[in-house]
Image (cartoon, rainbow, N blue to C red; front, side):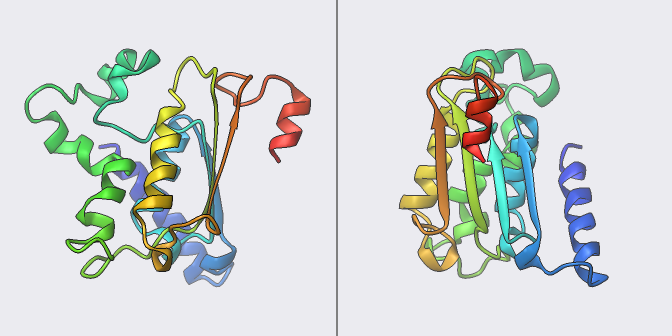
Length: 185
């Protein structure tokens, strides 16, 4: 039922827009770790039709391989084991931002977004830490690479829309101290 959290988050954003509190171009969201999974899903579900900017910190984005990296195996009770028959197909594939982006959900059958409801990638900043002992920085690295190399510019791919910062120190918080935290922002 994890998808309900994403639907609720979208509903709140949609309500803010519908009531005229803001417009999508001026609405942003930020999340780290499991919140990075949330913001990753915001990128690949309705994208810039709801958000003008997303900050995705130390994110969990590859739900097919999460359990093979660092502390990921300890989350199998929460998310399920993607290696067990039916688990990937029944729910993990639908909440895996990395796979949603690279599949027909976002890019369509031709890889250009035709035939999809995806609004494209909003301006996005991914932050991670080389020394994160919980969520492997490979999650953010792979997603950024897919956005830069595989996502057409009209759909928000490319270096003018996708930004990345990896701290070589720090940990799961992304920064080792307040000076590094301030530098991130």
